[in-house]
Length: 242
Image (cartoon, rainbow, N blue to C red; front, side, top):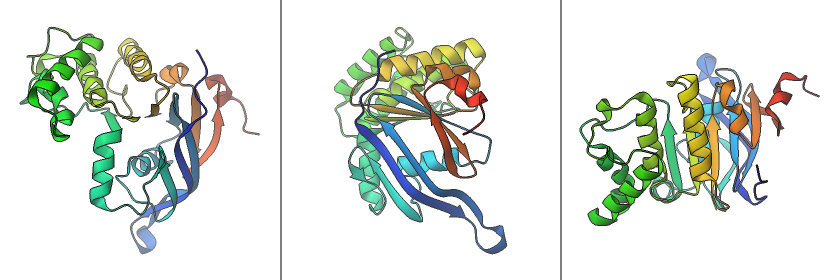
């Protein structure tokens, strides 16, 4: 695997995030610091409740941290208003979820068209781009199918096409293989890596699935709301922390 660019894509510095008040207050992130580079796929791993999804939400701008700084491709997100955040996400972010989040009343093609239509692209342009992306994920000929007629792996392929159709600079994947079997999960991660491998794009994957660690350029291990360590070799996760 060729080495990724060292250009910073995501910088999180000293971020705090908690929920609730008083005795029910739960601290999700404690001075969390994290960096991801353009051109690489970084995985966030760790036990349930360690803060992975919260950190992902802060990076995506769907949660505003109570302290610290968040920067994505040169744009500070902390402090941005909701309208500016929404516009930034529409242009620069793509999302892949474990539950696919496809709209069952729309065809496969129409699902993939949605991000482009939201951006104001013409129906003709959106349809052409959707068909191109569906071809890239191996679903040419299934454009008119409904999501419920597809297997889990095929639905996740549709979700990947939808996430990448508008050319986002940051692709965020939250447990993208948890609903899939081993072989299908490996195929999906290989596809995410290959389709999104570009000098100007960064991919961050939250996962519990150790079977897909090998697809990462680096792995950030979280514990108790902080990044515990970052490793370049998945096998190092089994060694004691220095």
